[in-house]
Image (cartoon, rainbow, N blue to C red; front, side):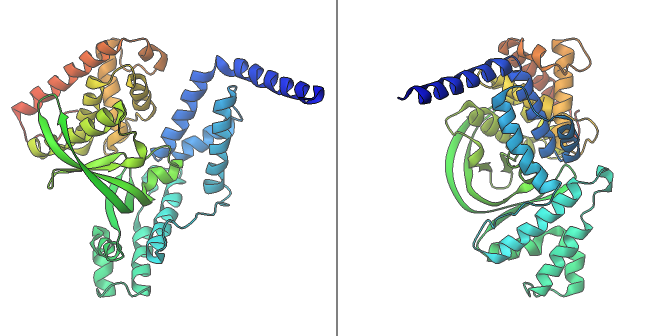
Length: 370
């Protein structure tokens, strides 16, 4: 190696080492701040993330800052400058067009200052117009406009094109996932009160992956869902390492508890179902995943709207744990949670689970327990 080249290499290494040590002390804080920004975006609070990014030019940790600048550039292109060019997700024009209509709806609603002003009327107007103009239905215009919101006709059209779909309403948004490739596997899952055998359908290729994936560029997305009628779980395969504790607990046990709860307590609200499933996660998590789950629950906690099941359940869970573990109304300092032994969190979560079980045993028809 030539002397000049050696000097350049040494200088480069020196700069990188200096940057690393300069930002090392802020790694956890920077990482947590970025996670909050991404979590808020995935929760539908894109305005919060955009406002914060106006104030945060950069992070001191070079690794976190690199990830932040890359993500920020994509967010700005999608929501600020409208310069993003979204590639088609399939070779099917109808599926691509439907996906584009939903993405246009998500973008408009995500950017509204007041969530109370969100509406789905333009979405369904555009869907109806598309279906009729492309002659995709035999239903009359008047009939379609009356029934379009039940999603049945759009679901039929998607399935006729050889794709599968699921329609949801989450955090104030009409949501849709579309896929065309899946596989299945059977699992035996041990829960606090039950052991169940269930089939998991792994979704391997999404063509449209929901509003949260769109809002956060994949940093937030649904891990899966349970179908009571068929005793089947659906799993977003790309989210999980199937050999990991995260899959074993945060997916399998979480979603399986939904299935058993849907059968035992048929009137329980989606928010209460989420609350109990999140408790079960914390009952079984080890040191491998406990801090990550606590961080996630804190980041996405929000008590403003009970109908937003995940953020509201996160808030109530962390509030109830705070009372038992810190004797405080709500402990938001992540660093304090990190200092707790995992066994202490496990046992306290078990206490909360048993409390909810005792309440439900008295009346299995309850719709709310939190």
